[in-house]
Amino acid sequence: MARADHIYVRRPAGYTHHGVDCGDGTVIHFTGEPGQQKINASIARTSLEEFLDGGKLLVREYGKRNDVDTTIGRAESRISETGYHLVVNNCEHFATWCCTGKPVSEQVRGVGSLTAHGAVATGAAAATSGVVAGLGVTAGLSGPGIMSGLAAAGSAVGGAASGPAVLAALPAVVSIGITNVALRDDETLPPSERASRRDGRWASVAGAGGAMAGGIGAISAAGTVSGLSGAGIASGLAGIGALAGGGMAAGTAVVVAAPAVAAAAIGTGVYLAGRKLRTRKRAEPRTPITSEVEGLQSTDKRDHSEG
Image 1 (cartoon, rainbow, N blue to C red):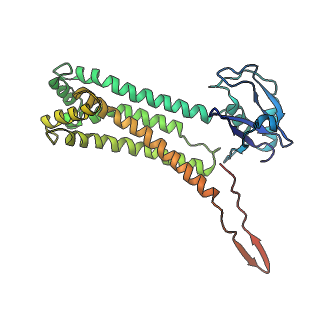
Image 2: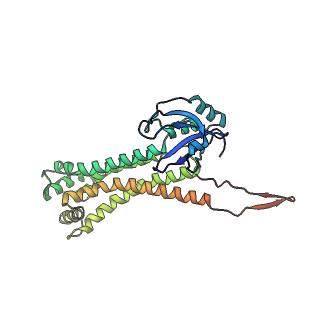
Image 3: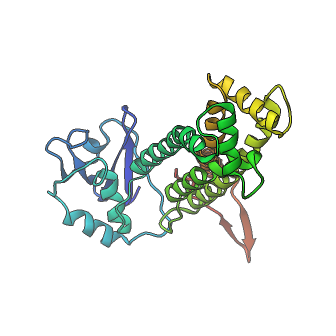
């Protein structure tokens, strides 16, 4: 820990509290009671002990960030300021702004991403029945109506077998976009975090594509009639729908929503796994590397601080 470090502590309730270390045993941070609008919340300079409140002190790493004097100057310039808000002006926004000039909260980013992904997947599943029922020459959600709708949706690329993939494309692209925004690159982040985010972005694309191809394969294999003939598609969708407690309409909704869900789940999962692996590698003890040059011995001392 050093002067102008962005420090934080995990609270028992599951959130993290952030501030800027002043290097003299004090911290500048948002004080007050937790919640959407903190009671009597203001930016203040308090003791490190009061900031920690019994928790373990952690230091956030950065890639590119502002110098010590700029960071402390920003923090001191906002002492006594009020206007705390959990979503747009919380303690993490404040500490990150002091260090980089960008008011960013990873906690808000994560919650917002999950909410958006959930809305896309739910919306895709809910809208599928209406879209399919209205596309074809045979309206409705009877077997012929669904097959007619899928044939109309997939007419430009291969017929009814391609219909679910065509319908899944838009929500999948939206889900990939959400993942890319949530895991966007930022030069202020440490290299390990940037690499993990890059992996997550690519994984979201691969996940959506794999789920789209897998959905067609599942349709072919799930029914009592295999293959991608009209009867095979109807049977496969009914088989998938039965697993979800419905029929062909439910099966279609599942296949259409799956790529969006996969983009979110696989992209986020790969990001979190990569982050954990890279953090573990940084924390592993290493044997000091020594070398002798003209009778002088030097030791490679690496910083194993937590990310």
